[in-house]
Length: 219
Figure 1: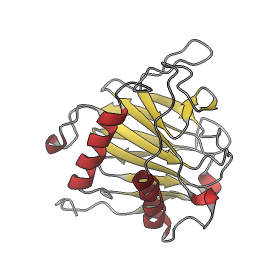
Figure 2: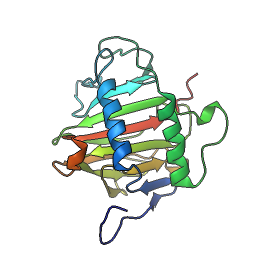
Figure 3: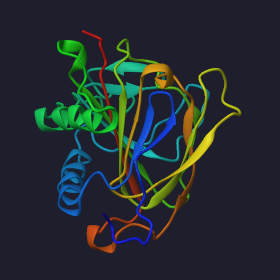
Figure 4: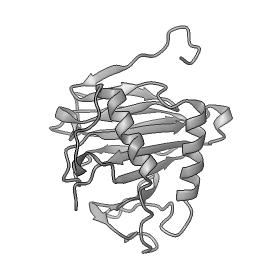
């Protein structure tokens, strides 16, 4: 409960896509932000991502477990300083399992395919955006877990066929959880807008952090 007159409720956005508002309490948000600040330091720290066509992503990124680059994974920051990627902490992997349980009512199935072994952490300044894309470089079909810290954003969740309509815009606030798997695992999604100055003041974050947890299945 966040004290609102009409508290936001868990919502199924599409088959397999679930929004759980206010899932992270203030203390856990602060702990996660502190960890992100450590991970953002070099080596293999926060970087600007450039696409093969010469474009530049306005959200900056740091990775854990495996390093994502357009469009694959590596064990070193191949498009950064070349350093080995930082390890995926066991507690963060467990947070991924907890998130799936909160969204679906049951944890991922047993075995290595259920272990969250990759984290992509994106930092959005007030004017940052993320175009419509799919998370398709993983071999696992396990759900993607998305955690939000700081400023509110408009999260656009689309369909599996194209970047266009139909899609639905969802407001993601600090502490919100969004999980997408099953029929929505390869749905296009993006962030068309960040709302500057909307994050909780006590968190002490200017901008937005998105922590995305994935199961790579890459061996």
